[in-house]
Structure formats: structure tokens, C-alpha cells
Length: 78
Image (cartoon, rainbow, N blue to C red):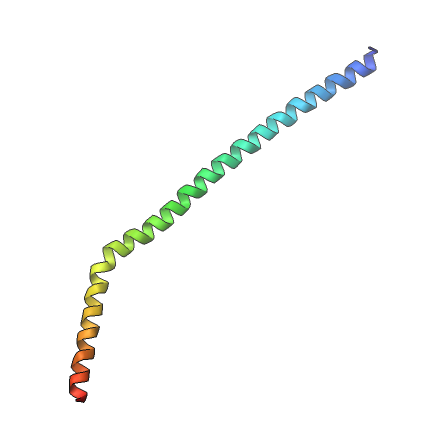
């Protein structure tokens, strides 16, 4: 093998190793991004469900007050 071909082969090997490192870093970054996105949406949906769970008694009370007011208005009309 002549020196020029050997140098070209070694340069190609170095470039391939560098590309492989970059590819692994991209794959690791994508994996971390997916986990963080899952945690983000879990937090958003969990907060909404938790807020509804905390506010539900007040909402039920308001609904009963409005339905009671509707009954009173209906009895006044009659």
C-alpha cells in the first residue's frame, strides 16, 4: 500500500470515528429530550387533574346553588 492511500485510509478512519461520536451524542440528546418531554407533559396533565380534584367540591357546591336558584325562580314564575 502506498503512503498516499494509507494516509487517505487513516484520515477516513479518523473522520468515521468522529462521525460515530457525533451520532452517539445526537442519539443520547434525543433520548434525554424524549424523557424530559414525557416529564413535562406528565407534570402538565397531573397539575390539571390535581387542580380539578382540589376544586371539584367547590364546583359541585356552585352547581347545587345554581340548580337551587333555578328551582326558586321556577316556583316564583308559577
